[in-house]
Length: 326
Image (cartoon, rainbow, N blue to C red; front, side, top):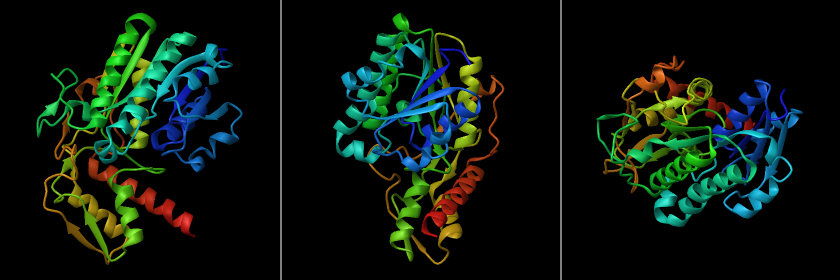
């Protein structure tokens, strides 16, 4: 292993971050994880902490000075930064814009400063479909524009992309922008399945759904996402590399997700729907991705549909919760 073969993962204890840490360690890399545990879970890093190639620091990286100072001993050895730390509660960011400014944009600004301070030349960033805004049933390509996000979360992710593309002009050899869909699976800290299961634990007789259930979006299982981003970093070597990541289908209805969750977790529960076509301000009721660009790299998801991904994710999360309650 080379002296510089160290990967820094922000949001390392989170849903996607912890899975990425495990993948990188399995591949033989050394990993330095950072998380403030606002959304992350210490249990998600249980396996990683047993690995000699893993080190961890509990830190709020929106504090730029503290982040830069904390990396003083390892900064010169960092080969790649995987920036996954962000606010993942879109509705909370809609109620208080300071949340996304701090947890989504300022964390990105801090990562950019680390790159400048320590000469890190490779950066991978978890962006989102929310940067596109509401395009209805049109399949959006990476080069569609202009981009008009309708949530503070999407706005701060788009601002983060701009911050990093500006950084790439002077300080990066490679920047990878991953525009994630709805990612689901085990170790979840948020999302529709997680929320439904939380609600059923509190009220087993009923499940109240935000919106009328007709919202339709693509869902991707976390293992498929990791296959995709690792392949992109391996094969896409332009200075700036921007990719949509998602399944080929048009998605699955929230109504179908609710029925799957109830069937697998609490069969006697009634499902009660709202009247609106969306769950909250900033929610995009229908969304489709064009994924021909990543397919051209040779990637296809193992889960062949959004519904298959949902069923697999519900099974994983129900199993996890059963283990915790046992």
